Image (tube, rainbow, N blue to C red; front, side):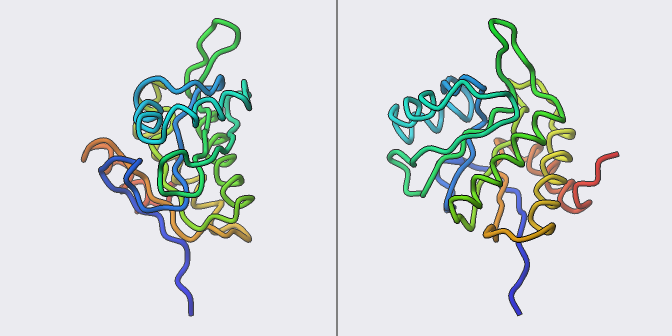
Length: 179
């Protein structure tokens, strides 16, 4: 009997993870500045940013896929949990993180991917606290993986420090139940 999908959390550099795809913590205009987006742009190359921006702008809560650039993966999924409406910043919220996470998972399935690495969408620059981010993302991913037909077998959260990893690990152990 095959084991079910797995959800894990590690500390590390998302650009060095062994997965079919990685998720970029994007803004809705899809330019890649600092944080996770900047690290991905440096590792994958500027062509990835140009390819992403050619598909935007998108609505906050949406996602698009690009090629992997120089990374040894199949795709980069750009999930916009925050962004701009005109010149007004739209910070991340539980709802934008939920939507961007789900849209990223749907794109992974459309591309036939079996594994994907996520950062903490909406945390950091996005302004969402890590506990809310972890609960919403884990709940959304758990529902998606166990709620129907999916190609995905492995989801790994790649986080910047041990505190963030522990927060995600606790959410995984609780099944992502949001209070």
